[in-house]
Length: 218
Image (cartoon, rainbow, N blue to C red; front, side, top):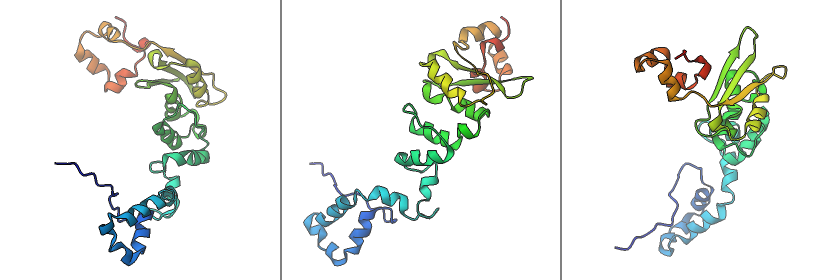
């Protein structure tokens, strides 16, 4: 049996497609369209294709007025994210993924320097793997931070350091280094069994964020 590919775009019927509105307005001309292989419909789809991105921004939605999507960090089209980023002072760099950009807009580093979420977020675009950022607040000095990333996940230490510099207060001396991190050998040497490990840490994230100097002496 031959495979038949339907070339027609599925109907949205929610006002989200420009071509559907045009096609609907053609009235009786649509009656004969099936007999021609839907040539008229395909013309409407093609002709309205360049208008669709603009329509996505200006159309009304059930949950908001026209243009509101431009200010919605979760639903803003990816190509419009730089427009949204400018309102919160987020500087976009080539290594940032779409997820990085959306996260940076939610937690603008420039507006929240020195806060733990900002410090952990700032270097992530330059990291690989789990992109783990370990932060400890220094005491008794308020606002001073001890920041470490894993050397295996930090291909460019200088770039990571530059991004962290923007995440801490200008008066703070940046205490940052890429380290080897804790290995399973370290865990095995510091705890007598798995029960002792489970008793020492609340969850896996707590264990993963542990620094070598924080483990008990073997």
